[in-house]
Length: 299
Image (cartoon, rainbow, N blue to C red; front, side, top):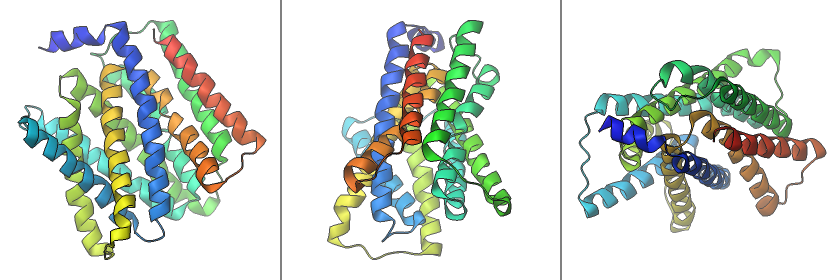
């Protein structure tokens, strides 16, 4: 069975599809970010994480019941590790957001593709081997894309923010480990929906407990469209991201993860009328250019 799945990964079209899925995930995460920004004035971070996760859990559970798909998995321990690492990275990211400028927190979280590039040669040995030239090119694309993120977001850092900065960096490392688990689960043949199901299950339980301790806002009918949009975009993004790492080259997908920042910036321009400076436009062009280069380099 493993050989069958691994043979499928070797087909060039599968690797190319991984890039397209990551771009769709990037767009979905940007829409989710817009929903979070719109809901932040009324809901706390714990509530937003809970509604984002609970909606996805209910939606996938309904699909599973409707089609009679099995939730039992021989890789339960790996699924739990992926969910626990992913949720921990999310908590660290929210802590960084609360104690750092938003642009700085996002930039530190987006170090995950670089850590993923460092970890993949040792933790993803079952992946299709790359030539030395391909690996160097893809590593360059990951670093170049991060330079574009820094140019676009212009992070600021003070000496009294060392702890929060370290936590933000840990969120990037945690996200990288979570993506490694996603890739490993894909190589082992786990379907995308099952991986997202266990992730949303753990996040719903953990964030639900957090919300009860922290704060719980009384829901109104007017809140439902926003929360549904948050849940839909988050669930779609998780499914697309899981499929991207399952079917695509890890470093290519990692470099295309920066597309979320570009999509989010464009949504800010369209919805909130934000303006772009010269360095922000240059940062976006860098991200796009290295994203295209990474897709070509992995062929």
